Image (cartoon, rainbow over all chains, first blue to last red; front, side, top):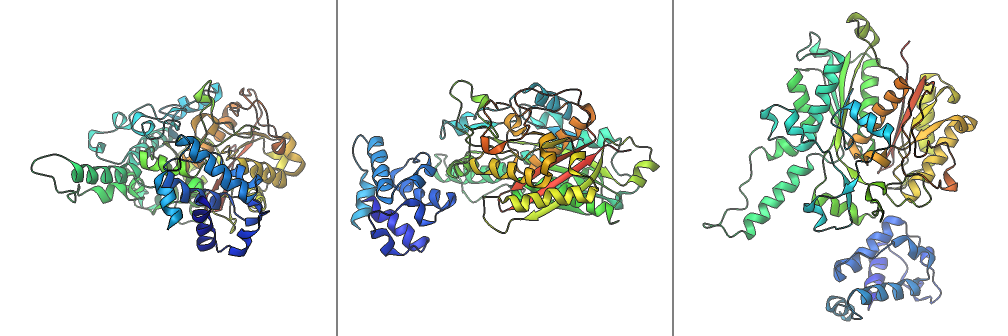
Length: 93
Length: 410
């Protein structure tokens, strides 16, 4: 799902230690991302889902799991409860 | 001085618009809004081609704006083409993105030819031979130099939002250090294109439309601010040495007292108060003025969450207790953000405020962010002010900070 896409960005582009992402209590703020990093991370999703996710800075107040859940919720809301095929295909790859 | 802006086609209408609190901000043109329905822009209402010779019709819009502003400034200064000291007369230009309209048109032409239905099919690689001279960043400086026969140096500074403030500062230094005796300085920008707006939209710095009145969407230093509105236009000034001004019995509008320029060396988009304050202090120190001798400052004031807080702190840091008595306004709330042209436009507004005693307001500022406590001249212009010195801040993406100080010429 979404976490594969976001994890790949964080590990490959921002060089985040993958083991950090396994912590279920991880806060987004602990990732050390600035505003540009955040919008770049969102672009990985937006490029596939085809619309802009609103207010990126709100994610800094969430846990990592909450952010992923929120992203999925926003995308499903946009697509009448579905996840677009492009995203699920990406997650399987 | 000269200007063509979303508030008017010359400096007087621009300044009058700012004093009225009038907004040049509106929903974007159809070519942009069909892709980005919520995006706002501050466009110049007057077609610059109508203000120029027919031979200028093929130039990029940024160059056309630059010529309009330069013509007004040179006419106001009483300087005709080919001055006797043309070899000692320079052109200093600031621009953020070069000939954005020409670049956008090139790709539009390419893809239209590629997907077009004309028979025989057009070769998409056949382009107008003047595409490069139109889109090059130094096209405005080149055209001004050629039009006026100015044979001193012609420089183009591309320092994002600080471009034209730095152009002023570097021209000031070039005159002061004796390399030239005079310069026409221009800041220009024309990138209200679909491609450019898509890029700015992706950066999440553009103001969201006010649901009641879109023209009030840009709210610098307000607790509910959410970004700036991209604008277009140009402004120009003529700067000369005191000796030259006295020789030709010119009537100076102001004297540049100081220029500060620093780099954050920190982050692409997040400024630092230490380095911004250092730029302000450099300008004050060069002018040999105490902070309480400056009465008005035109802030960079982009209405971004972080930018406004950092600038308010940097003003406090540089001015100390004098910050409490300083009038500060962010006129981007009305004319939008002209990027490469913003520094010189706001400098022109500051000088006009000094000479008229009328300070334009920060429009749409009903609830000041408690982290930005300064006298922001909210909502309504202030008249009858005794102003001897003014400053203008320009803080750019990339961490380049410029601060200019002008005072009355005595």
